[in-house]
Amino acid sequence: MKKILIVLAVASMAVFTACSSRQKAPEASNDAAQAVLNNIFSRKSVRSYTDQPVPEEMVETLLRAAMSAPSGMNVQPWHFVVVNTRETLDRLAKEIPNRMLETAPLAIVVCGETMLGEGRPNPNWKLDASAATENLLLAAEALGLGAVWTAADYDARADAVIEVLGIPSNARPLCVVPIGFPAGNDQPKDKWKPERIHYNKW
Image 1 (tube, rainbow, N blue to C red):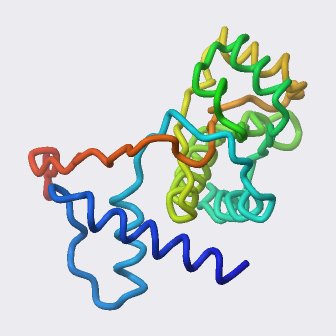
Image 2: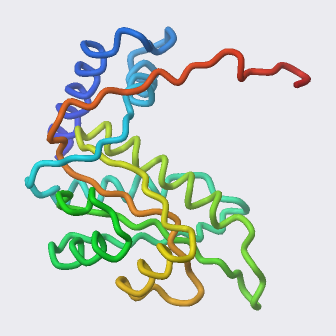
């Protein structure tokens, strides 16, 4: 498994180096740091997938990465619904609707507990679940998978996801992430905008 992950990570770095001429990672002090930066800069939204199943070991790696995210007061309110049956993927694709789910062999629905103990609201659940989602997306990139963040936290779509997946009342979906091996040759976008940076004062 470790050998597979290393090969996939190296392949992902090679694709980034060959394909991205506009956006380059800053110089790093060592190979490990450069690998991390390359992975961040090569992440992109992938919306079409082959029908190749995502191995269970990769799914676990994605979830481990997601759960390594920072969490306010270390509450870790996140829950992840792994959807890997064609029947449920098709139902979600129809009810949300979400065309990416029509071809994706896998989706991970990132949810958060909206209440803390003693009935207190959890104001940080969206922030924590968002951090977990970004970790998941970066892990997918490192593994040679394609993924895309699709929002689920507005009423009509959230209600549909809750209904299809049986999410309990103390939790809410933040997003649905279709995942699979890319069917195309998607490229990362250059999002570097120095004019958006402010030092000491806006």
